[in-house]
Length: 347
Image (tube, rainbow, N blue to C red; front, top):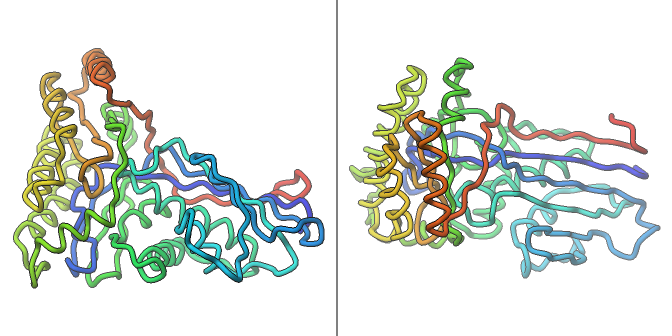
């Protein structure tokens, strides 16, 4: 294993229509979502244990954190999601690892970045073993680590989008079991969608697990039968059909309707910054907006513009002047990718 380098990349996701129905409290549901670049990048340098005093060194590049970790005695004190993945995955006892993790997507941007970190790290660590997890197994393990190991609230759609990539329609028949359809979108619709989308980050992260707890408390004793969740399920099916038809006007209306239902789930899911972005997008004749992920007081909004690229650029300038950030995105046809080099030779 000397001079072995494992690389893994996993996409993030936006436009998750039907989100909240992929949860344990909803029991069943449907989600339409879009996997995008920026990816999460994981690179693992494997060296003989005899050449170092540290079994695992983690470099969380976005946070400027670098520290050693004993995988046999893990304390979740710095980056629990990363530390839990290392604790869970078995790798050879005679090697040490230097792990670097990076993403151009800001932490807490409501793009499923945490799930992509877990997916990419599990995929990379899996490459050090003799067995191989399937993409669905990677997604399931990533979700279990976040929920069972760390006790956090999260749905299953983020991990699935990250392992499969593309534009997905996810049907949850009995949580956490799900069927994933990677939608076959003609190139002209794919290119048009990619060109029309504009991703705006409000400059403040959100805490997804805490938002989930807030919504759960408001849903009552039988949340799966709540009419708001049923409406979100329907919107996922309708969004899939609208995109397959290349009907961007309808897709934009469905994005807006999803926001309306999100707001009805809990008044704090659509913060003032989101409202400001949505109002500004309307001034530039955008077809619709989708507050990504759970919503709350931080995160991002995907704007579906009307196809006038000059007007899109003018909108972008207006958003920047208001202090928001524009995150460049490309639609990701591929999901999790893992490859290995040994002594600079690709295997």
